[in-house]
Image (tube, rainbow over all chains, first blue to last red; front, top):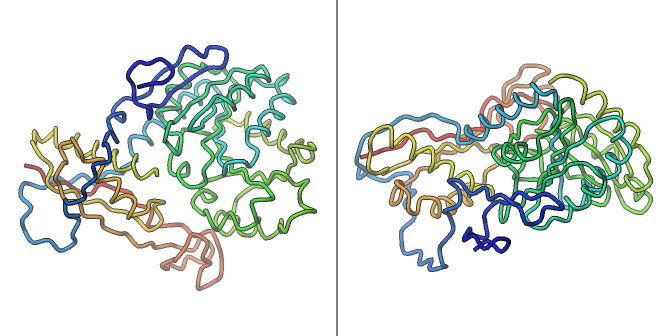
Length: 277
Length: 113
């Protein structure tokens, strides 16, 4: 049962919430909510029947499908993208490992730029309102998506969150994905640009350890440069690795803590926020 | 574990096509998974076992067909089989190849009755 409203929804339901309106929330369960109800009675006595050489015991008629498994997500993502384009909203999908500083980056950015641009934020985390509360404190509209056990945001969650958030014409929509360098790479949300954030203490081989994420990103922000004197981190090496996976990758080095490099990032937002997608 | 959402999307797609065919049961699924699709086959197998439960696909067998990658170098046009996304072109050592094959994540066909 849902521990917020007791409505009988499973703990795995996806929940949208706004700071200051703790009582009100939306369950995004849809077709996906029925899974995983098994009470661990896994007996595993059913044979794994995924054989590659089974004889002709399979009956029935063949239906050729030839369809991309993520086509539903991709269609919804395109629908989001069309909506953003029509309303001249610049949507950016921020991906990274947990703890790279995405929320701090957004806090500082919004505080510095909110006089110039309208900002709206979608926060994705498995649990808690912590990040949404931090963004709420900067005074811009924010909605939190709690994915429960989910490891990524998908286009449907964004579709629902945008309906609630209703970002204004010409605004910047920052989507902070679940901290995870693997799964979010597969799910297009309809964003204009994907931004991968990494930080100096994480090490300089991230781009080739998680190539799919770097391959699908447009900009790489390298945060916590104030820690460079204390750790073994080779800036050129990380850029070379990232270019091996994505030759046209752009880079911005910042320290959110000291503010170093932030101007370049603000210029990037100005430039990419105005360019029509 | 994005493999679970992927397994559920497979079952959903199969259900959709089975309904169009007025089928009562899906007995087999053929799934193509590219080496560069970002999906771990073992995890997908495990997720499929959960995803088919209580669906029209329950009891079906599934075949996961691996698709090995093929890339074309964007500098010299050489076509080769890369082992990773960051392998340089064996002909000119350039990076940034176009992936021609190997990112597939497709439901190829189902058997229904």
